[in-house]
Image 1 (cartoon, helix red, strand yellow):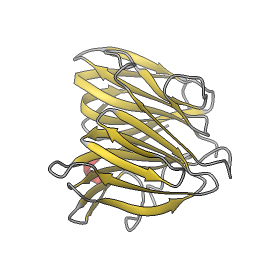
Image 2 (image 1 turned 60 degrees about the vertical axis):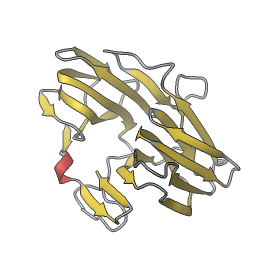
Image 3 (image 1 turned 180 degrees about the vertical axis):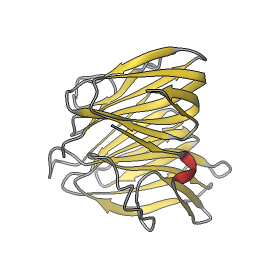
Length: 236
């Protein structure tokens, strides 16, 4: 079974200081046909003007992952964490019993662009936590590399959910496949750059493609491509 979400079909929010594209229903954008896919609840592509951001607000019982595409994001939260998330960094925050945080564009001259991804956890009321990595030491070319998993001692960050995230940067005409880590899971692909064919479907920049009820997923970079592959449980 497949699910296709083209870039131009996403919800569009423009607050002046914030331009946001919502793959699934979020905030004032609502579409009953696009409420998320099982454990995957939110994929927002946010672009924040210099000196602006999201003031202190709270979350609970949600796994929140951020990936900075361009620029730098300043983060502070109620665990005492203060950090800067730069281009290529991956951040994870387990909201658990409750966490309050703020996110601001660190720059006074350039926009920051980032993905914010929310997943429902497989454990409720956990102790709130924060983690962050740079992908510079683990990234590879023409091969998917892991940036997130359910295991504390595994490569990348970890979350309270049976999910695995991989990034891929592939040259033109490079073909490969994704083998699912866990039976019953599915994969949602999000194209960051270029063009890629997945299971025969041609996808462009910022397109989304979900597929499940299969164990192996074939893909081929058509003109060079960079994308996220997010394996998620389909039975929640």
